[in-house]
Image 1 (cartoon, rainbow, N blue to C red):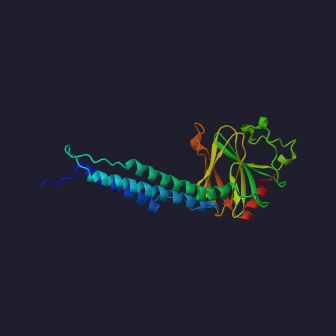
Image 2 (cartoon, rainbow, N blue to C red):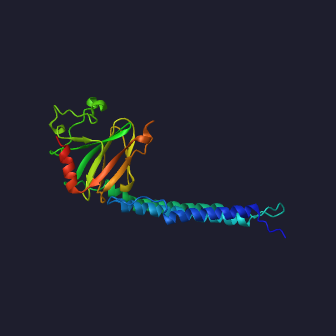
Length: 270
């Protein structure tokens, strides 16, 4: 008696196994995002988890259905083909249901997650900083004791002398006490407002622990508001392909205690 499996059945077993193992790896979270370090991060994490569950169920059902059909199929040239006349209708109904579920998720969880970053009102006690992206580095500016940023003079931007923001400290009073650094330091549990801009091409400001990813567009000043909740040092990377040196465009964001932040900023004020 021939006990060999038909190649179609072998394929069905492999397909079902790979599908179940793939889903199992996501469920076990062997490769997951690092612990959140911002107040709004929980909303984004819920959205991502729901999207993974939604897409994962659809993926698993589709692959198992395909495996079942392949398992039942057999090569028989004399077999009568049975048409599945309602197949198109079933596919359309399932597609509409799936897309409707995705749109509902985007309109509820997605809207709440977006609003937690971009619809938060600015507060008086916020820490403000400007972030400038240029090929291939990030630079940061804090207002001085007057709480005001000095104006940017495009013609005075010169990286060779460290004037990344085009400041004229001789004529502009507001520029004299601005603090320009190559690392971003923020106090824990205090609202932060970053103003993102770019000097040359489109860059991106991405900090995975803060669940923040925002493009930096030339000619635009884009505000991002959040509250860091965990002391630590986090990598800032550019996720937009911005040139040959894109791979090395990175900086660091350090979240410290309020007292350490005051000492740090005072040590750099003019």
